[in-house]
Image 1 (cartoon, one colour):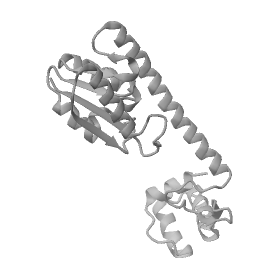
Image 2: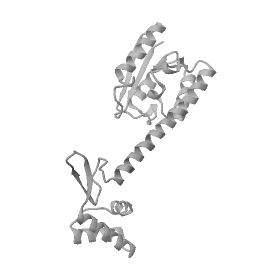
Image 3: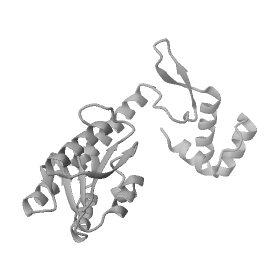
Image 4: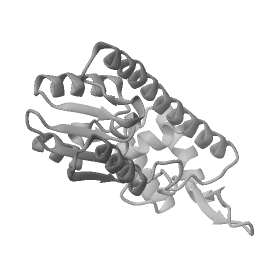
Length: 224
C-alpha cells in the first residue's frame, strides 16, 4: 500500500484560510501520521483551476496513473480536488472499482468506505459545483459593472477604445475617434448589404486600418 497526497491552488487564490499548498501538505501529513501512514509522494497542482477535471490536470493525471489497488489517495479538502459533481462522482466510482481508497480530511476521512460517506460526498460535490458557478457569475457581474463605468478589465485593448491611466492609477477606456468612425461606417455598410470583406477593404482604404479579418469585424460590429 502506498499513500499519496494531492494539493491544488488556482492562480487567483491567496495563501490564506488554509488554501496554501504548504497548509494543505501539513494537513495531509498530520492526518497520515495519525493513521500511522507515511506519504509516499505529493502531487502538487499550482495555478490550475478547479473547473478542470482531475484527469485533465498535469499532476492529477500523474496521480491517477500512479495509483494501484490497495493505495490511498488523501486530499485536505473536497474543493481542492473537485469542483464538478459529475467529475467527483465519476472519479469516486473509478477509484472504488480500482480498489483505491479516497480520504478527504474535511469530510472526516474515507469517502469510499460506506454509504453515508458517499451520500455526504455526493451532496457536498454538488455544493462545490454550485459555489464555483456562483463565483463565475460574480466575476461576470463585476466585469459588466466595470464596462458600464468604462473601466478596463485587462487583456487585449478593445477595438474602438484606447486605455488611459488616470491620476488614481485606474485604467479607463476612452473612445478612439478613428476606430469609432470605422465601426459606424462598418455598421452602415453592413445594413446596406456589404460583406465583412467589403468592410475590411473600406476600413483599409478610408481609415488606414489594415489586416482585419472578416470574423473579427463581425465580432466587433456585434459588440455593444
